[in-house]
Image (cartoon, rainbow, N blue to C red; front, side):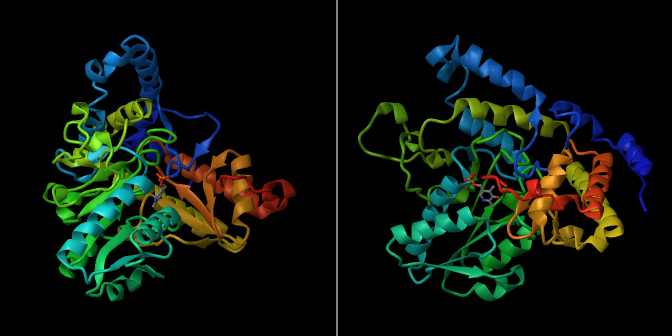
Length: 416
Ligand SMILES: *Cc1c(COP(=O)(O)O)cnc(C)c1O
């Protein structure tokens, strides 16, 4: 079995190890929750100060032009596009996943209806992140219940669900609960061959695994920046639409920022021809500047190198859990097949909530997801091999001692 000394040696030899210095992390904490809220890049502290004190405080309204605020959703979108295989002027950073999904789904559905009104079904997964399903439900209701949402119960049921009446397949590539990853290329090819449109949610993919949207042939994608992209709480998400769909997709939240000439103040809405049509209103400039600064660290490496380390970390975690935790009722919810694994490992335990609270008490921070999931995110930018070893060591202590049974670990907080 791998020892703690082995892990220290692996850290010493890890070519990505220096990147940890780009983050501010509490000394006494093992942070395995970058899949929920990424860590704070040091550059973002000075960038936030600069945006607020200098660009806002001194530049005042002139900063919309002089500091480039106006162009930011597009400029930062182009920077982000490189991480997900998007083309130039195919990504804007704006709004949340939920809002972007509404815009994209509505635009794609309207286009699909023009092509073939008999296609009325949206396919997704019952286990998809609930907000994605809520958005589809709300849109269907708004459109007069002429469409249906078909939810598959497991990922192997996808092929059977893609029937000739399907308009759109809307999937999250990496499952937020289990970390299972779809092969974007082959799934998209299958969906497109059936005549349906393909929309991806990259919430747990962007910055976590290599993604090549252009090569996939998908029709659109959304994602967030506050998870593996480390842009901070509530930072705006992104939307990707390939150029071939720009004029075909008309999104319904027709705000002035999506107008072809917002400052002409024309009473008639006319969308911009390009990706800008997916904007809506005034962007959150301070948060957007943190997306910009958070992308800098990715430019010191590449997604292939990050993927190699991510898999090494998750493999190590699984090896140590197998060897040391199996007698305590711990199960593995994440696949052992590395080709289908995101950058997280989820364990099951009948008292998962209390076990996670006890871990957090010992400063090993992951999170709990209903109904019985202990979720650990392994961000290769700043998680060390020795962190993996130490986290499992604390987990073993909590399980072996039964410490998680203490009442204090059973009280539920609003955010789990
Ligand atoms: C985190 C996450 C979201 C969050 O959506 P917001 O609107 O940005 O809060 C949506 N979908 C998936 C799959 C997620 O993992």
